[in-house]
Image 1 (cartoon, helix red, strand yellow):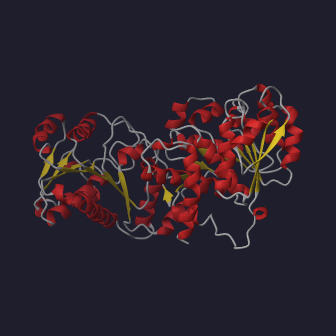
Image 2 (cartoon, rainbow, N blue to C red; image 1 turned 60 degrees about the vertical axis):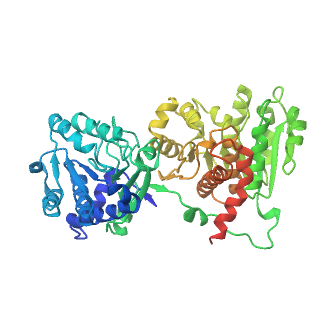
Image 3 (tube, rainbow, N blue to C red; image 1 turned 135 degrees about the vertical axis):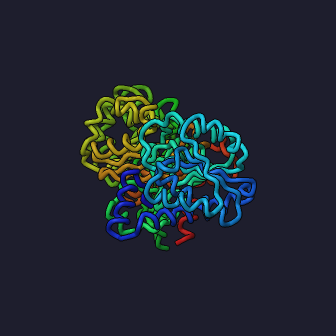
Length: 518
């Protein structure tokens, strides 16, 4: 499914009106009708005690007037609180505002602070609210009367249905513009907006309902948005059932380079996750000093001793052996738990430029490119980077908080600049591709904030590539399945407290669930 920016949505509206001849008045009527349907499906009981529609000056307010009319026609007590005077409302919104008196809907004009204070007595009586103040076009900070109205609605602690966009929320970044309505449900039109499906915007949006208002699919295809929301249906197309005569020689051989003193668990999780996702064979290359430990931690993966540059660490002395070991393998997973040693950094950077097979680079593998990201540009083989916000910040020379404020821009810019795939982990993990496309993953939950989860994702992703899935699709599938496995555990065990190894063990069940629907 497309996920759109505010500019893309505005262009779709304009093309629908100008080139397909569908009047804006009809689009507004469709939007209001669909929003009313969703409202009644969720808030009909509370609505009998009174509905307040808080409306601004633009078309978002017009949608609110249609909702108010629809509720009044069904016998619900509803009042419109207009943050303006009626004479300043124009166009299609004005036409719908003029219909309200005949429907018995009171309109309380609150164009200034004094009128707003007078209206607060009635506002406190409403049991449920419809937010129709701002739409998707807001880019500046909310101030004055509008800010006070939004904060007052939030303080009432009543359920709120937001129309198209929670007022005050940036449609493009998911950041509040100073203040923002906290909606229980948001009804958005035609396509979800970026700010509604990434955090913190998803929290302000609440339950997101996407409704059709008549915009032809051809319009979206002409605009060609570069953001997409992953779904089970899409991922199902990436994971094919296996023929009955499949054997381990058909399902790929992954090479994992991971682990250092104190971080052997990262190596074991990565190797085991690749097998859980279906890789036929996994060879785990480790420093000779850790070989005995790794043999006790892993049973199904094969372990290979590599020359050490120091106690339990790898360096350039292992590069020739690793490149020889890579022959005949189908993917290289590089980095989990490798450690920060300078000698290891030299090896990692050398392997990135000389690997004969596709790579997944994670954790310490990424940290060794801090300040040297140009070495990742135009690699000889396809590569996927899987940073968390801290690792991304080190690659970009910024802070984790700056990355979190502009997650989509950071992921897209790095992927396009380096010509590789980037998985920016976190709530609503992003998958960015070299062509600028961004996929937003809806699976996963706060219980994944625990050690080892990233190692499992690296193993799953590399395991899918090893089986022959292209890195682009493997990144999407692995991220989706990884989050879905955690969601399954959150339902069955509890919201947190489950372990990375348990997520790994839940991966086959999520693959089975996908295949069961084919």
